[in-house]
Image (cartoon, rainbow, N blue to C red; front, side):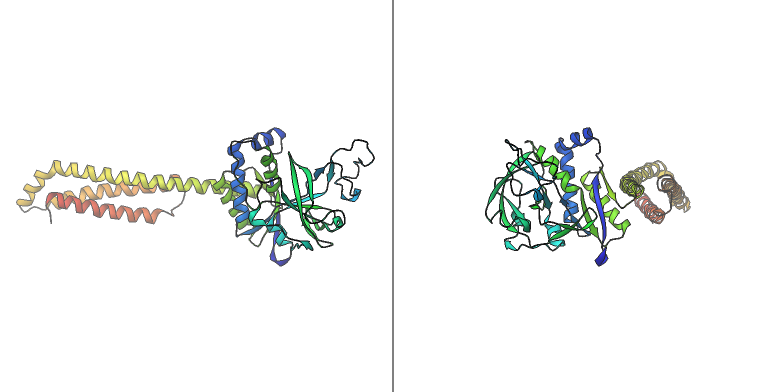
Length: 358
């Protein structure tokens, strides 16, 4: 792709109808998707460009067959016309700006105040071929997934406006109703969220472009996946093996951090145990050491050195075993040796103070 970008497509992996239904009707699971999407959309590492050509269903639509999603459906001559599937293209602010779309007449979308909470006056921009059929400010009611939405015409696109969509570098929007996506997804609550459950998945299954290398891009997305808890995705143009491999590395890294934290806690307990045992042993030998010291013998120093050296060697061996068993390398060994040296000096200092040795 030009300008140094690489293009990818992110899709969900809930291919079975039962899995998809179970996920989108579960509030907690759907909110993991919300967090994942928002992280992707706000990422500085790439441009996430949600777009989709989901039709709108309009009752008694009579503007012409060229606007229909499928010309095989002909309701123009029926006595009781049914809702017509009209070409519609949903688009996010990032995609709108990335493809440099403009408004020829009227005004652009007010992206900052875009929300799904007001579907009784939702903005829409029409393709150039709709000029003469509608005017700025006109209202039209259409079925959008599971809801009837009242759209207000905000403007018209210039002729031959196009975007890149599903491999087509010039997907023209002249015959399309352009519906804006909200910039940020709102978490769903306890109320009915069947509409959001379908819409949010449509928004997630989108293209994105990036200047990052493939490995860097996968690591960024893996981080967002781990933070949000959403893992049911794949990336077209990237072998699934590499995605699963990055997921595995992410899990290993997370587990490694937990092990390091556990190691720090256990090391602290180990130090406390060693110091406590040293004090107990020293109390047991205290009288013998003091008598030896008064007689001028250096037995006390030898006992102190023997006790400290014993625990120091035990501590080193423990550190080595943990390093070999858990981490399979010697990355943390220098820190372990430094910690053990400080432990040795600390124990020796404490023993000297307890016995009055100088």
